[in-house]
Length: 176
Image 1 (cartoon, rainbow, N blue to C red):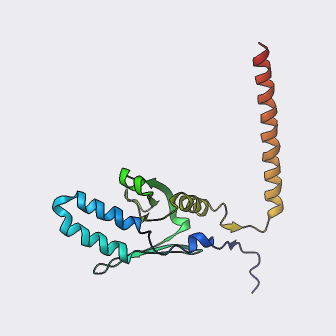
Image 2: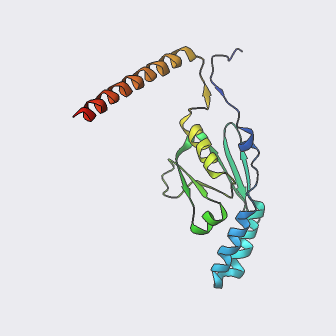
Image 3: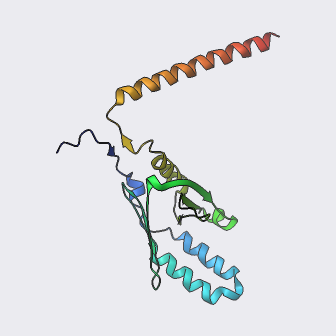
């Protein structure tokens, strides 16, 4: 069957697909958090330790896979099409260590994030990648490139006209 009329998804960039585990700085962050908890330190440190060492990521053309845990195993698979909103958060400690959390929300109705990606080395590039997949801007290659070219050309012409109008208005303002 010829499926050349169907849209094709672009592959995940190599630097994104290569991410499988969080960076080591996340364990440092977890340790400092546990120390700052003082009383809860003996309970919190093993929990965070096992979370760090069992956390795995996989980014493919369909979505994000995340898993962690030993006794209570958690696995989440989130399709890019389900993403509604993306938030980038970092505490003072996380900023000091060069870390941030990417909170991904869906339309599931919960006020909490569906998935929280943490321990990524380039969180801004990851956020931009997720935004592009969420919007579908770079995800789908459409067969009708000519129509898209005409739209882009029209938008460029409109932008040039607006710039020309702005220059005329500024010139008149400067004369007055």
